[in-house]
Image (cartoon, rainbow, N blue to C red):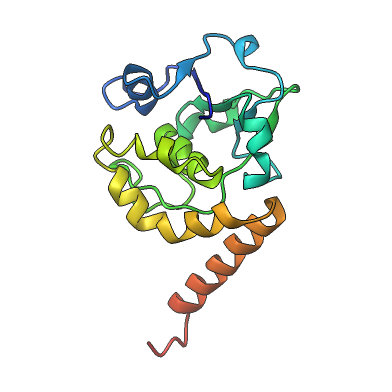
Length: 178
């Protein structure tokens, strides 16, 4: 089991906040200060140059950290030096606020996806009963998550992501006869 750590910037509506729901249901523990985040843990960051992959399991054993802040305030994302920052690869949001938008996951979607990529499917499945959009998240992203979870490293995750993006661009692009 991977320890999930939540750092909350208190920027979202408390009634819709997935970080608060994760805490309420025991799906993660709160880090009240940045200094409480374990050294060497993985921080999910949209600014990381490296994609999360199964090769990161050894870092994740120290903690998987999600920074809960709104996408409109993403420029305020806290940067840290003693952690491993990783970005999630291409995935579609299934939550009611960002449904269908690529790469705009809420905190719970990000954690659920990370756990699957890291090989902790059983732990990720605990989200299914707590978030009504979770089955839809798996429906939209299940095949990609399965591929990402089989990747050897970050470079392979990026290759899978890029092949998928090229495929969907080709399927929707001009001149498509389908």
